[in-house]
Length: 420
Image 1 (cartoon, rainbow, N blue to C red):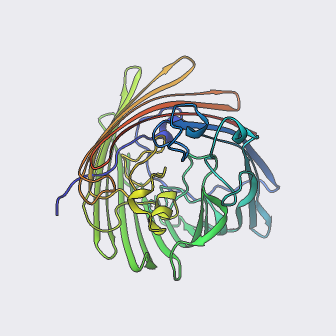
Image 2: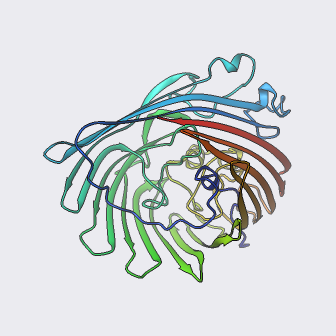
């Protein structure tokens, strides 16, 4: 079989974080004790996106900013958390509501996220959990977000209106010096298509996960994760993922490698380097995924949902995965990150009261990839700024596919988030 490459795209997480290009050390920490009492946080979101080729689903109306090419949401979230209600027992709950403000009548034809499949307006309880802390151990059970650093193959994606969440039981311990151990059983998850619908991540007993993160070596972080799942898409899955980050001569470098043993075996490797060069932050990332198995995907993300539904290469879904070359600002055209090799170059600079970000991507894809044998190219220009509690993001993406599918695509996205 021909070996090829993986998906390349953007890291809108870098935009949302203010344009920091330097690799982030994958460290998992036990939550620090908090004063007793309830803490309330919330967010208001207005989200708009238009795309002229892979737009909101109406291919007959594909001009930028046309109703058929555009999607929009307005959303509000409210979270209440108490880390010590009584005897070390805590609890948390997060309510979200999403709607369209009536824009579907004249401005847009679809939404980015729904709380119930087919409904344009509604609400959901996306987090609902109990916690118990004793010594250096924290137990957390219920609906919750899972960070990518803790669970690289089943994590919450923050690029959409609100993050997807999981039903899980989590135990975090830091008794060993410079080491954090995490054990988890992940029962199921929702998706952006239906935040209220928590479905099993597989057809049997959930996904079991163990993560170890160590920082014993100065300026070096090492995180390893193993998974086991029964009957995931018809076969048992065992998987392992390693992520190493370090500071070397003033640069932030990273290396990652993983294997997913399913009906076939997927191998993946990646590397990145980044740092500050005068006023510019810049980074380079590469990745390779072989041509067998499931590829590298986020179990619980929308890409996995497409694959699980049997849509395969017909589903052009947004989403992230654990690879350094992942995209979350653009529309990811890969149903899975399979049979691909990618290169991503990004740079940011402080300007106009915020961050201006550029990302360029190139991927060479093989026959087993959803796109077929060919090339994928992408260029992104983004701007992010904060005004008090208001975070603003705007981005333009140009994509070109020169493979079995020969198309180009323009995307414009604007997001405003008010944190309270």
